[in-house]
Length: 382
Image (cartoon, rainbow, N blue to C red; front, side, top):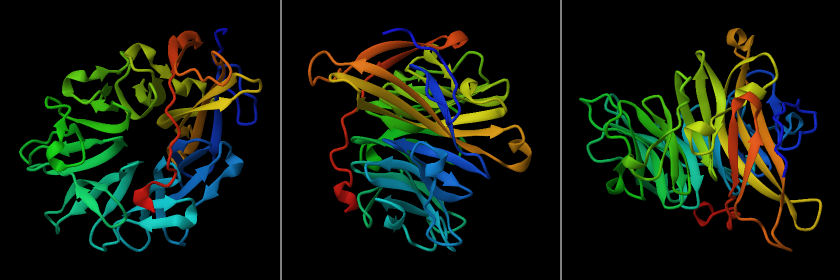
């Protein structure tokens, strides 16, 4: 296949062959995209949970009560997770199927909680434990709406679970009150299983996970791990002041790199050299941006034996005047291309492609898509 061209298109424009298109999902008020899955994108708009289906016209407000504050930060099959507040502390919440499927996981009036990620084993997040002033944040795994596992490591000051993958939970913990450090870590279903991914860091955390990869930061540098401290791979661009990875899918990682003291949405493919500045394809006038979530799709093509791949990245961007009036826009970046299978009915499990990206270098795209979720509503949510 021919090398593609990097293009930037408005929401109503057709995408260029193998080029990024940009859709402004919402351009009024304050909105951010936090999760993407299949045809949908999720986040919040003016402090209310919401969703889109690839265009600004498909915006759906998930608000159920006049005074609520809510957001959707993750999705798994037909279950979405986040937080909900309505004249009470912030509660961990899931939505099954749609806006009316809201379930509160921690309805206690004295505790705050939030869901940060979901997989087949259940939601993960954080829960405040204890009475003030000795209240501490604990990482938790909810097995269902009424059962939770406290992942808080013995002796730690605080902890929080931000990511989930099959058989694994990941996030951060504070090792001791005498040390202000924050350490990235993983669990495998219990507090005792915790593994410290960054014993030498001053500040590190895992923010996303997929398969055997965990992503986040190590002392303000974007990085990835594969289950051990020794496996850490530095993704930090040499020209950046700071960088961070929020999410991962297939072989890709997304987040931001602070260039010339402004955050730029970014995508990597497992190495520092693969860094691609997604901010550069935004329409003129945006001064800051972050990429928060990524999903991949493999779709039937127009001809027998042909297929289309799609990579969706959601996040947000701040226009110039937004620095003064508070406006932030939810953004969808999309990359699409054509694939051809090796034979009738055969899908290519792995296809290496190089996409031309002008002066930004070359980003190697490896199409390695996960199998569809077998249970759109997992057993723990039924």
